[in-house]
Length: 372
Image (cartoon, rainbow, N blue to C red):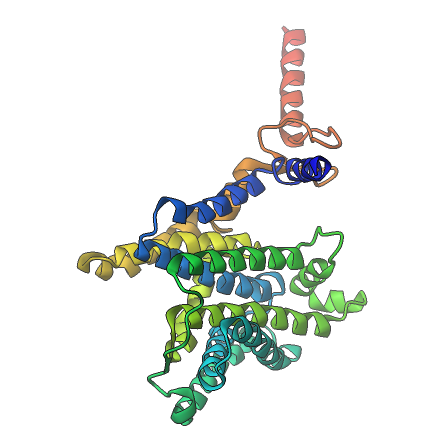
């Protein structure tokens, strides 16, 4: 047992504690798990639960658009399919949440693969317009069969995820953490065990060159749509059982753009950027909406924050913070704390430009002394 804990401690020390960004992520997730021990205020827990759901939703958009370069303006399709699948299965077949939520993700995978078919022929703006049409089409289908889908009123009376709000919180936060870790490993270009991240980067940067290099771009684009759809559907299924109501608002166009706003604010093509964007912007807008004046200005505040981020932190607030506290070794590409002067692995100098400029300055001073 002691050897087991020693192994975990060494892994944690060598993998997490050496990189500031991972330390911040660990502290953040630990804080989320400790919140119910401090307060069980229903409004606060509700905001944090919805933030966890939307974090999965935004990160799933980042997998498709940020890492693969397939701009999706109708990402609410996956969320809505997952929500309606979970709601319909629960109401019409009396299936529990632990069955309906995975099936919601599976159904969203099928829809994601179907939606990914246009990606084989379309790119850029044209692909974005096609994906924008899918939620509108599904909304029309829902309105066409009101007896089965609930129509404009939606579905209501869906069973609870658990018996109390605190249990809901822990379940959803745990699912969020696991989903974010899986998506991060799936898209990590430096992973030694999973190489999909490198392929997705290649498709995003230059699809023609990737295809010429032997990469099956069709396969990886469909795979990106499927993975993005799966986690979007999981988020929708959890939302259905938490809110107990599913309506056409889950397919709203503005809801698709919210995923883009959260991701761009936090940092695109990072996975942790969308999580940071959701946990900053969503609680802020919800807290501003608690009074009449704040409800009137909350979208104006959101717009001003987005303008500020785009002007001064164009890569996102999470990436901006990461660049301030981390530095990558120019020789071995290992991440180090920004305060270090030499790499923790290969001992190469981390600030070559600073060293060169300092050396040139010293040479200039020596030449001046000789001249005098």
